[in-house]
Amino acid sequence: MGKKKLPPILSIEDLEKKGTKELLGYLKRLHQCEESFELSDMDKNPELTDAATIYFKQSKRWKITYQNTKLILSTRENI
Image 1 (tube, rainbow, N blue to C red):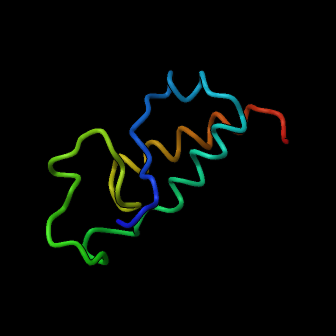
Image 2: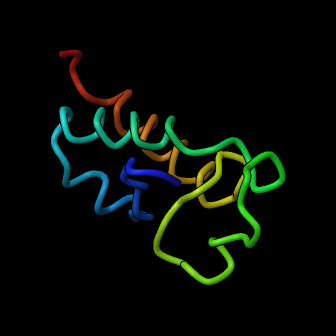
């Protein structure tokens, strides 16, 4: 995965506690995830052993977290 920091899974409650600038940074980290395990160069799927981190955009955890982040950002004023 290189040196980029992967986003942790955050509950909607944790996301709501973050400031707008923090949420935008988190959204950027979500966008930096690889598309899918099948398209990655990994031998083993790390999501099978790491339940706290998001690795791939095609995973259910990415989709839910992304949707929640966008939902919260839609209620915030623009920067």
